[in-house]
Image 1 (cartoon, rainbow, N blue to C red):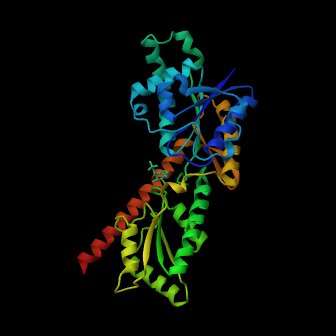
Image 2 (image 1 turned 120 degrees about the vertical axis):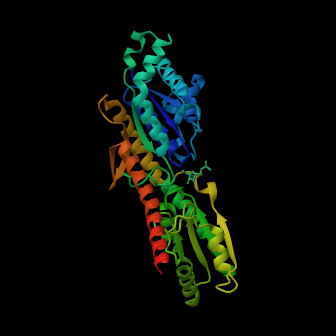
Image 3 (image 1 turned 180 degrees about the vertical axis):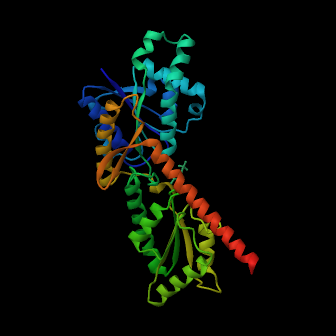
Length: 368
Ligand code: F6P
């Protein structure tokens, strides 16, 4: 019987439990044994009871649960070869050579490296006397499939990562709540949202709540952002708006690549010589990541989980490690590392854009 293992890694995101449920049940449906690796890569390295066989009913009710019920952890040991050697040993002991990982791009890159290293890990285990050559023969190839679980929606090549719409819904709900106080007291609020280096959550939340101004890393703010924001807010106030909402991504930058902080924005809105607004900062924090998944994330988790099991069973030694994506409403398989590299290119472009604009600014200043 083929044995397939599923694990979650990196920051938790709503929908991860739906992924585990779908993978476990699809694996069983196709006549395989399903395993869960608890505590992410930590479980892979430590093995023992952190690798557990799952039954159909073990994942009952998981669709509506937040976080990840099989745990996730930052695992330093997996970064080192002895850790990966222990992980390989644990998989072989359990008869597993097919792994589905739901996590962010960092976790998935780690998985791809593990797969590439697999033959040499097996050789080392044999030379250490852990296994005989014929014992590892059925495990010659490790097949890995990735699913993107992250609230940040920061992977190139997929329209949505599992969890991003739940976080977006939570942010919008929080801003709706804040608006009661903003309107009542005629206050301004600077709302900081997560997203690491990606501005998707901030941009979409700003659009969905009709925010007055939005800061995101992908579009570093012009050097006149202070004047621009103040004049927009002033205009909105003049036409009778009693509340001001500025959404700022945690990775927001100015054109020189400097961080724009909520305090900088607040000080400006509150400046007595300017707008003089009674202003508060709300950092939404992990409230955005918790709670039950919205319908879209449950659907995405289920459809992609089913596809991941198919993909891991169909993988051959020659196929590249794939990631399950969604493009224009279709669930598709994509080469994992291409998606990761494209993501890195975008991040680099943001840095470069900020750098080039800073250089251009410096040149103008020097020539004046
Ligand atoms: O990647 C998800 C995320 O929530 C980011 O938006 C945020 O920057 C980060 O994780 C926070 O990480 P931690 O939970 O380790 O503080």
